[in-house]
Length: 357
Image (cartoon, rainbow, N blue to C red; front, top):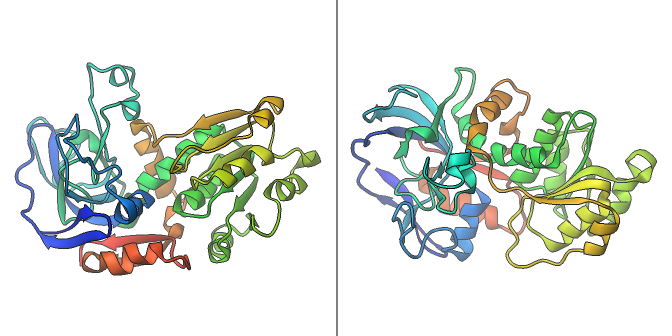
């Protein structure tokens, strides 16, 4: 079968490899149909290995070259012994986190995504979404309804990140929200905030093309270019009594953007950090203290969120496909996908690979 293999930074190759064999007990084999290129995949391509293990992973034993792709879905083609969750022919969305299921502190408390032994399909598991087929554990796959497209199935993973960020911030009906970063996670967070009932949403990003795209997705969105105006001042002019937003979500991993969140949030508001910072970042802790605000991390998502996110997308309450700007084939993934997303011009947002062509 065809697969996109990570070897080193700037070294991705579409190669013919042996297809997966029979799934073991508690496992399923799927025919992958769609996979999205994630910012994490881009970082591996540009600077990796980062999350691809250099030494054997403590839970999976995987190291070295890796099939990329963790935002994907497909159709079940075979099930292993003891699998009752899905059957052959089911269309599924993949929840890619792989971790202990018991006899471990976080697993025993249902907090699987916080496990220190966490692995991820497409980074530290033998199989990933950027291939024609994969083997996963039964807990990694969730049936999707007939009304849901193959593309939407692959968008559940990044959408789950956005939904959890809003959960961490306590976004609810009537909330005012600032999102910094108009990348795929940022725009999905805007959509998740709207789905949660946010009435005033602001989006900050220096890329004018992405802000234009964001306004086509949400015409009521207030967009801000932080290189041309103060984010905090613009937010305050658009909130009751100029106090700032209830929740500010940093979705890019940028120190200045995080500072803007602290400035723009109201007293006793919440700042949520979603974007991964490349190194230590300064924070105005004087303001954090004097404004009595909460600063919270948001790591991945609870694995139990899949049915909820599937329902949000399938019912149209969270139209995740709006963030997809380009669709390509696997053979073109490097030039038309990874390189296009790394283009400083930033004309693309989310690129989806169709594995059925």
